[in-house]
Every structure is written in structure tokens, then in C-alpha cells.
Image (tube, rainbow, N blue to C red; front, side):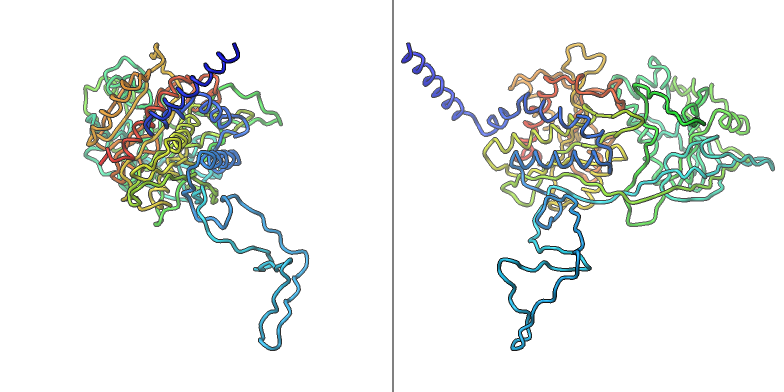
Length: 581
């Protein structure tokens, strides 16, 4: 009996070795993508220990250390800044307790005598001890962002017909996007929803020059309040992320227009209900969901002095004043816009000016991306894969763990690095693995990388893959297998590769594949598109827990996430080995 059991074990072992020997390098890598490995990484990265991973806060540094450690464990080399012998962590160097003794001097040679071998002297610079190291690569790309926070003392005025109305921050308006102190008084133009979308035939700025002016725009987009309206179906349809992209693009489009200020008008809704303070020392129990109340904007420090237009959100009584004095019929405008029946023309509000005296508190904040590399046969060509590891942090007793957004995408990047190492072969092109910071603050980490790539020149990059929110199901995903891909239209091979891999490897994915001339939007592939690099961007679903404390690991669809990572690996394999020219 013992001989039979032993024989069976040996036969099984030999067969297993034989099967492993028959696997191609690509399939060896695919086998390294396991559910247990994915669970282990996601459980820790989205745990309370990470404190919501907000940009520049302690949790983001903890997360970056963890991601760098996993790259090291899997075998991907560091691809970040030069490091003086360490891994990029901040090291406190204490000053000496007493001035060091001067070394003895040889009278004959007038040179310091050789120190005792067992006790070499420390180098002393500026009262600090340091030690010489040979610079090596670290896993971190370090940089700074400028954080701006409203001071609370800004003022806003409206003037018309000799009458001047003065409004105060925190009472009549809240200050949003403002990067530096500013003061202006300028004509006012109503621009509807303030959308410029050539693909859908919308230009709310057509026929008017808004340079040097203050614009008034409505929150939302045509048909946002009626999902049965023609314009809602056209602009959003079943792509729920489109709402976020529309809002981001409304701000982005202003960057070259020379607008001085933006007044966001919300009709028939109390936007100020969260602005109040308690006069007694007590904080109410925080709601289960809701926005962070202490969220502050950040920006890259550009090479030139520029200022994004200051944005304010006004209360209902200020909105009513603007509507009345400007002669606007907002209800009719919204109805016409939802139907898409009338081309909107901007309205110059005659005789009206708006003034803003902006005061912000600003400071520099240290942040970092995590960068790793697997060297390829061709040292002059790169493909990159990335995901943002930052999220919303903590506020009022709640932690925004961001299991889906975007711990899930970050795990994909780490796991694909593991798979390429497990393949046992060098790719033709080098692969750069990136975990971005600052995405939630405006896609800042990826933008910085493309401006100052720590590996190669940005013109040497041939392809970029992005993962953002790949672990959940949309409300209409009854089979729990839907996922979205957006790719650069000029590279149809990307779609062919994706469909072929789903069939060949029997992946349970129903793909919604869209191509665009130059894909941009609310995630980090935008910076690569702007550098003429073809992209493929993954997203599984938009859901009610988006940017809420309830985005927890208990809601993850593990099977879908695993299959997405497998397909992403297969796509990147082809890109890294020359299929994307």
C-alpha cells in the first residue's frame, strides 16, 4: 500500500514538472497572478493602517513604503531618484553632543594622521554627522506640491447701477479652486453649464471672449437632473464615470481662456448647509457617507507664474441676486439644455461687474511617486503601467479606505510586476511600474513624472496602461463581469489583443471597449496622452460608494478583479514585446 501511494505521488510530481516545463514564459507569468496574492495586497493597502492614503499625509507615505517593499519582494528594480544608500525614507541626523576632536597632523607631511581603523571619524558638515555613500536608485520619485487653503478672509462683490453688494467667505460664498492671492473687478458673462465638448457639439463659450472676465456657470451638465432626457443619454448613457469627467473638464477647459474668476451657481438648493460652525464645543456624530470637509487643493509648482481662476460657490440668496440683476431665466435654460433643442449663446450681463479679493494660506508639501523597473533588451524603449495609490484620507472620525479607488488598481500594478518576474525572461522593452500620488488632487503625480521622468526620456515611451477602480460592479451588471476599456484610436491592435486574450484564456469578462482620438479624463492616462503616447485605461464600474468612507474591501468582486489583472498582464506582455509600434 505504501509503495502504491509513493508511486502515485512521484507520478503526480513528475507530471507537474513536465507541465511546468511546457509552459511558455508568458503563461508562467500568468500563473503567478493568484487570488490569494491579490487579496493579501488589497487587504493591507485598504486597511485603516493606511489612514486613507491622502496625498502628503502620513498614510500616503506608509502606502508608498508598502508598495516599494512589494516591488522589492517581487524582484522589480528601483526606478526612482538617486538615493544615498537608502530607500528614500527621511532620516533624522542628530548633531553631535560636543564638537569633535581635531585630527592629529603629521608635521612631516602636513597631512592628517591616519585614524584608527576600528574607529573612523564621521564627516562633519554644519554641526551634523553624515556618512559617505555611493548614490543608487531608490523606489521613490520625490517632489513637492503647493497646498492652498482658504484663509477665511476673502471677500466678493457685485456691482450694478451704482449699487455695490459685499459678501463674505463662509457666510455668502465658499472659496474653491484658488492657488494664490488675487484681486480683481471684471465684467460678468453667463456661460450656461460652462462646457466645451466638440465631440458632442457643445460650446458654451462660442461667440464671446471671456479673457479678463468673471464667468457665471451652473453646476452640473445638460440633463443632469433627468436621466431620461436626450442630453443625459448622449453625455452619460451607461458610462457613470462620465459625470465626473464632465465636471473635471469644466475646470480644465478654462486653463487657456484667461478667465479671472468662476462663480458656480446652484439653483433651488441650499449649498451652505454644511458651512456652519457649532458655538459650543461639540462635534456631532459623523454621517456614514459624505464629502471630506477639510479637503484642500494642491498644485504643481510651474516654471512660470500662473494662477488658475479662483472658483467660488455662492448661496441661494446671492444666486437669486445674480439671476434677477442679469435677467436670466434659469428654469427655461435648463429645460432647453436637457432637450438639446436650442444652441446656447453666452449672455453678457450688461453693466454688472464682480470683484473678488482672494486670500489663501499656502505651503509646500513633500510627496512621492513609487517607481520600479524591469529592464528590457532594448534600453531605449519603455512601456509603463500605473495606478494612483492616493485617496481621500481621514476626516471627522471616518477613514476613506478607497478599496476600489484605487487600492485595487495599485494592486494590479504590483501583481503584474510579480507576473513579469515570474515569466523568467526579459521583455524586449523595459517596463516601468508606477504608483502615483496626487491623482485625487488633480492628476499631479503622473503629470510630474511626464515632466521629469526618472527613467529615460518621455519621448522613449511607447505605451502606457492605467488601472483605476477595477474591483466593483455597476448596478446593471447582473452577471458581475462587466469592465470598461478606453484606448487610443490609432492603435486598433489594442482591441484585437484584448478580445483574443479573453477567448484564449477563458476570462469571464464582458468588455465595453471604447476608442478615442486622444483619451483624457479623470485619471492618470491623461498626462501620457498629452505626450502623444498611446494608452489603454481600465475601469470596472462607477458605484454609490465612490469617494465615500463606505468604499470598503467587503464589497470587492474578487473574481472580476483577478481576471482584469490577468488580461492587463496579457495586454502589457504584447506591448512590452513590440506589438504596439
